[in-house]
Length: 451
Image (cartoon, rainbow, N blue to C red; front, side, top):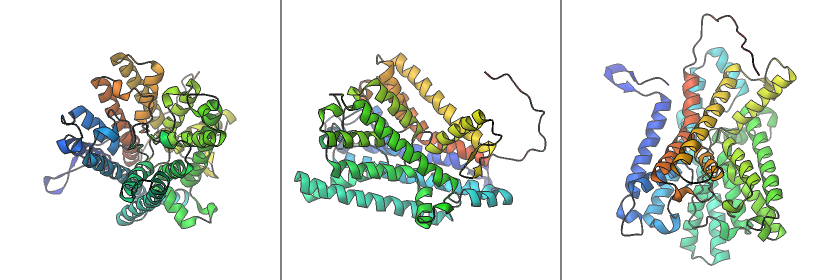
């Protein structure tokens, strides 16, 4: 990542990746300041700096991990601040990621731009104004539909006053589409575990936000012409569908007879809860059963799904499904002895493969390092700490219930991990892409012994 450079008139300009980090850090700081105000909480003692900072980071980075009960600790004003931070964080991620893709595309040479236009139409998103307008309209449409469905259910099915139902619908619609996972009940959505009119709109909003704006833009243009979809869109849709099915089937099968989770429900309720918990690692932090009661195999599968995450330039976290698919294709090509890595009748460039490897390995390093630190500063089990670290890095928000029990140093580690997991992949890829420069020579090839 390049340092700020002096521009005309002695002014300094930031690298786009640095501007992204600075903008989100500012939002986190302002959010923490507002949450520390006495009118943001219900208790007389106000909110400590650590709690406010953790909550603000979790909201801006659309994670959903909490150290205090959202429904009881925060006042209406505090909930409003969290809602605004979630919306700004989600819109900011999609807008910045899309604009960085546009900037990278425009920085390419003529031949590379022609190739990019043919292979990754989603990168050429048009001018800045159309990108921002598209992101805002896409977000508001999905949030409005979800809010209306939820509000009607809360009012007609649970006898909530219409003003309260509208507020509940809006809050959870914004939280769901932005993959944030904040809920206004102490036990998240467990009161509605068997209610499809609550769980399904939330789940589909999570999926929609996780696909990413470039995918929705391309589907809007060519919804009936799959042959014109770019590699990015085809890869994202195929991987998302496969992981959703695999996750839902595994969770349902593994927890079917667990009395602490799905086993206590009737068969239709088990199927609904299994699907819901196959979607949530995509990466939203809602839960309708207790994750602390889930079997070890289910928790491990959930950690894998959380680490993979959702689509690029969307509200989901993780290393992204395209990164995961690229790594699988690299392995497949090597096993087959193929010279090139190919997908959807296209060859994938070496630089893209190196970027995917970099993102994945740095993600593993961040999770492992954070897990080791958390084990040293707390008395929690390895399984619980690892789940928490993956959830924070992938900005999921799911937890086995240990977040509030971690010491201050552990909560600071999770705060840093949420910020890194939300912005790290975007800033790293954009910095690597924008630094690409031609070389006039290549060194002789060397071959170290592998394996």
